Image (cartoon, rainbow, N blue to C red):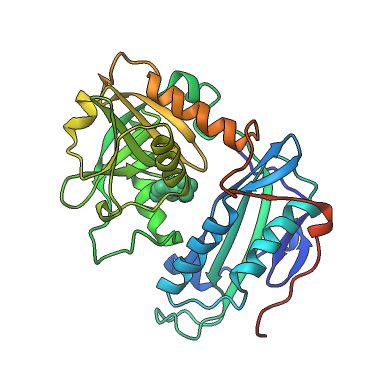
Length: 319
Ligand code: PMP
């Protein structure tokens, strides 16, 4: 699907026309995957557009940059303000926000230290990720032949560009084999996560999800699901899960900014539960969409409203 272009992208401190936010072919990130990024949703709520868990996303972005020793010159507060500004200036309502920090053009030595760090924040309209029926009908997945990176190789808590080469192997293998998505095991053989989403399993009335130590990205939707599930009185377990738990599960679903909450109805052509979206998945979807669509008050401070007044230029913290 082509990206629907909007008017402006914020690029190294100022808004530029969409077509002007370009990089050189010899940029470090293009060769070595040296970038970190975020994916954030803005929902069109009754009181106007509102960004979901902006603070947590920006925190993860800043952490990802820290892990890779990148100093982007802008503070978390400034980055958050720009996310709001980019939505407002482009007059967006329901949108996807993509902040990106990357090593730019100067030298092609592997040594990243001293390579310039550039930053861009784009936003554009966006709907469902895994197809229009995915959230009601569910998706078929395979357990990937590719593993997530072992601890001490790639830092899986960082949302870094290069890590998505692994995600692309998982995703493309699944697509070529006729599945919608792949679920990868970690290096020890425990269930880890999908190519771009976290994994939940309902087993004997309890909700399971892989722990951070299973080479997952610490998903913000995952945290949202855990919070909502606990509030609903469900027993939640962050535990290592064997592959076969998926085959014996009553229900399974993915969580993520892109997929939101998407049921998994079969794994390796084995039906999960009765092969349909299950009641706990449906309850979690209801709780989630009540929150993100603004049908219930934002009691947890999860939303940043977008008001035109918020749209003002942001300069580097120390440049
Ligand atoms: N795992 C991976 C590998 C991802 O790319 C994503 C999407 N950011 C997730 C999990 C889900 O994270 P979140 O809920 O924060 O979008």
